[in-house]
Length: 212
Length: 131
Image (cartoon, rainbow over all chains, first blue to last red; front, side, top):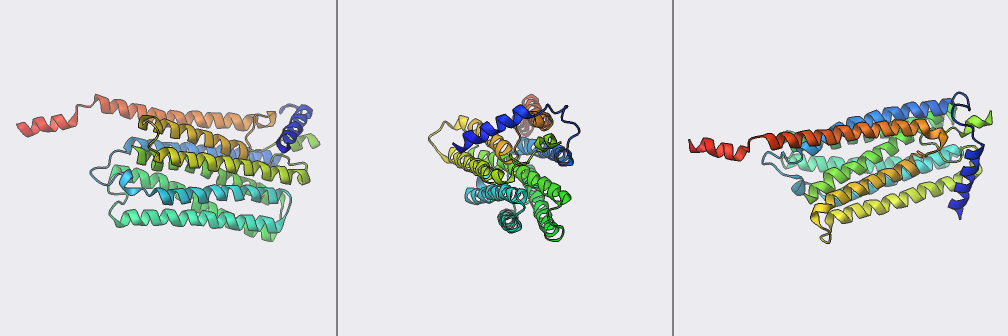
């Protein structure tokens, strides 16, 4: 019922909406979001190069351990759950920001941060375990590509956590100003895009690696 | 002047102008997206581990599931729609997807082709060994 109503509402909005060129110049929020969207897409193009390198080198193990021996599906499943849940709480945070609720924003940001940090800890433990048994990035082309691809995503998550902390400090000090809200919009875009990259990561690296 | 309020950036919640109404329907949108993503993720892990399916089709199945989940994320989390205020975002996305496909599929095709054209190295090694 609710969905039908929401769709109905949207149709009415769009009927009343002039086409994009008639509406005049776009708001700053739209321009900033679009610019950041372009950046995210270029970031994803960069990831695609790492993905291509990994796919080409996936079997170049040089006699070293292969993915089947190294990957622990349970820990990957927990990492995926953490990141997906943090994407959800990030969405709830942007709703709280839209309705200017400080407490809800802080709580959602805190849960997002904790889940993202849990993801990072699990990933670092996995890396440390692999390096400890001599399966570091210098062991084979497969492992070099693996550490580059997964590590690059991990670096992005780290940057996201730092960014989230900075944004919460800005909300606390400056409040919900237009500039702060635009930055928060960019952050939530960034965080959701990281989750899309992770979807491909666990599919291509971990699950397909175990299958073949 | 209120017309411009309907312009949506990617990632914007669905009903910006009407805050009170937007909260509950926004939560609903994220929750639906989250539930679908969880189902698709669980399916991916099941497909990779089950022995019920033909092994040759598993990779293809995983790819389809990943594409579906990417679509879920784009629609429910990033709020990319087909509306007229989203044309630019969709065009940029389409271009990004084109480049990604070119890079990944192109690399795989070229490298597989190069591998096929190589003299089989094991036999070559054996020849050398015999001399």
